[in-house]
Length: 369
Image (cartoon, rainbow, N blue to C red; front, top):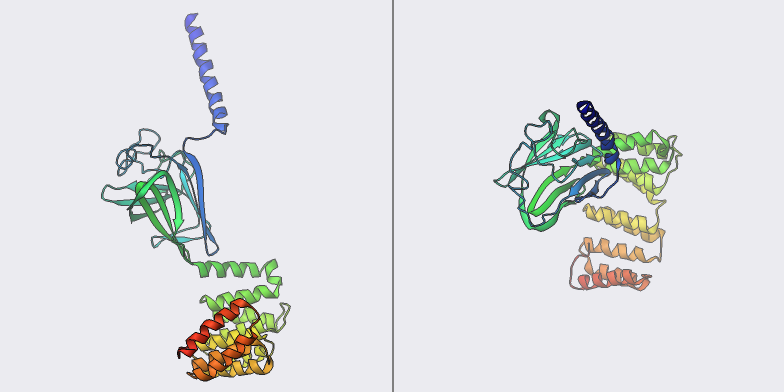
C-alpha cells in the first residue's frame, strides 16, 4: 500500500512539473542581463542586433567566464559550442537585405550570432540559420550560414556587454561587441545602388509609379549611382513625352540632359539643357553654371551666366554668377566688380557674409570657385 502511495505521489509530482514548467515559462520577469537592441540603416537596408547584456562584475572574462575556442558546455545537444556573444537566449542579428560580412556574401535574414574567441587575439564570427535556440547549447555546425575570422582590439573597460554599429558610410558599417577590455568588430557592406534600383523597379509598378515625380527621382538616382542609363532615359522620357502625367519642366529636362551627357551625346544634351534653361529660375540657372565650372567647361559656363543676366536682370545671383565665371577665366578685376554689385543686392546676412569672404579672396588674386 505504501509503495502504491509513493508511486502515486511521484506520478502527481511529475504531472505537476510538466504543467508548472510552461506556466513559469510564460511569466514576464526581469532578467539579470537586460535585453538590448541596436539598429542602423545603411542606404535603405537595416542591420539590427538583439542581445542580453551581462556585466563584468569583477569577474575574469576572457579565457575564464568566456573560454577560448570551442567548448562542451555540459548541456544540450552540441558536442562543442561557441560563445553566444551575450547572455541567455541567442544573440540575434538581422539584415533586411543581402550583405557582405568581411567581404563574404550573406543573404538577407535573421541569424543566431555566435563567436569563437581565440587566445592569440583573433575571433571567428558565426552566423547560424538557427536563431531561436537558447544560447549555444544546441549549436550545430551544419546550420552555419557563414563564418568569418576577425582580429579583436584592446579598448577601454566596458562594464556591460555592448553592441554598437559605428563608422557608418554610404555603403558600410562596423558592428562591434565591446566587453571588459576587448572589442570584436566586423564590417558589413551593402550594395546600396543595386538594392535601391531593385526597390525602385518594384515601386514603379505599384502606386508610387502613378506619380510623375517618382519617375524623375528614379531616373536621377540611376544617373548619379551608375544605374542603367538606357533604363534611366526611358524613365525620364516617360515624364516628358510618355504616359506618366507628362509635363516638361526644368527638372526632368535637366535630368535627361545629364543622362545624355553621360552617354557621350554632348550636342544633344546641350540642346535639351538649353530648352530647360528657358524654364529655369535664377537659382537653377546659377546652379547649372556652377556645375559647368566644376566640369571645367568655362566657356559654356560664361554663356550660361550671361543668359542668367539677360533673363533675370537685377537679381543678386546674376552678378554672383558672373563673378564666378570671370574668376574661373582668371579675370579677377572684372570678377571683383560683379561681386561688389552682388554684395550690394544680397538680401540676407548669410549671403552677405559669404560674399565678403569671396571679396577678400579676389582682392588677393585668388579664385573663388
